[in-house]
Length: 479
Image (cartoon, rainbow, N blue to C red; front, side):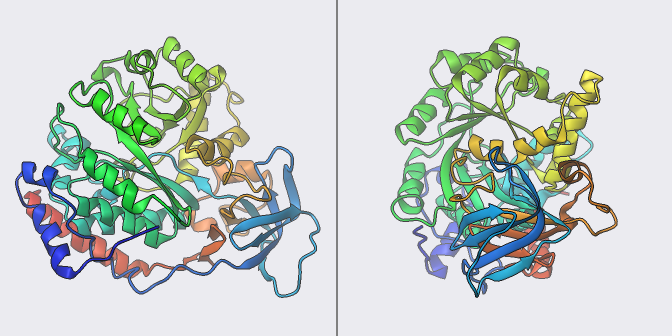
């Protein structure tokens, strides 16, 4: 991936642009990338190695392989070579002891506004301090350096929590410098991600995004040779934005980008025919991801299934916002692929996909008044292989299948909240938390080991986040 590093003077020009008029913000050309957070600035991605994870309870999420008690996973140069009970490996392979632990694919998160992780738990108790005004008022005060720190914080929390793939749904594309800072933070973190280019906070509803900059981003960051960790998408505004809807969507299609959109969000928003309009207009296909879809009527659900589109559910934020309850069972019954997401830690508080899985299962069973309506194995599928398929990565990640990229995690079961090892899938969904994640590997690189992140100085990152937030609040005059 080509990342252009620019002089400090150009970076300062980029940050100054944030304080300019909205018209200047939207028309400004690339001004430079942000200075990286000191938490990552001196650290390089670890090399891909030759590893044998041995003796763990392997949940492969591959129907042909299944689960293997006391199994082994051989990884070399970023790929899974073999999975099995007894594997012959050459001398010199580094052995990672997974005995008494659970080995499974890394968790796949499918929709997250990562930049506003700086605003963790700030959505207030009144309408004036709620999530939407919070994001807009403070979002417009972000400098490119704040984007870098916020995304670094989010990516680091994801890796700590066993999430190896994220969908960075960026709806704060104030200037080219802001966009580049976000992408640079993802690249430095070592996480696998789709970066979806969205709109800047405060953009008028009838005004299109900076399509020239989206074209630039594809050319500069996502063309030619790449390490394959980052892919590009379009974070769309939907049918409720008639001045931008068709122009932006047709442009994204011409660029060959997968599209993701919030649709049928809540009864208070109206527009219950949004998904059906997308189908009528020819935009509903297997490359489309619909977020929330809480008010989708049966006809819309049928249209999603027929098109092969996926749905991303975020139960913590959907319930926290009062949008309603996810229609998990209705989607599954119709054959719609369901995936899971964090959405925003301004509402959810943290990026714990274990609690997201637990919430999805428990809410569905509660609505059905049936303990057995949705089981943990199916939920784990949503958080791994189905999440990968929803992002178009199912042939590369999401299961421990020989030939796929080595994105995997190891969860300890000898800690007080996990002992004893009983049903492994049930434990992952209902008992595990991020502190139980012992090892995280992305693309064959070990990014967490012994419960500690390899790349991140967490104390420095916390200080950077606090300093960035202070500056944002001051510039926004947010009390």
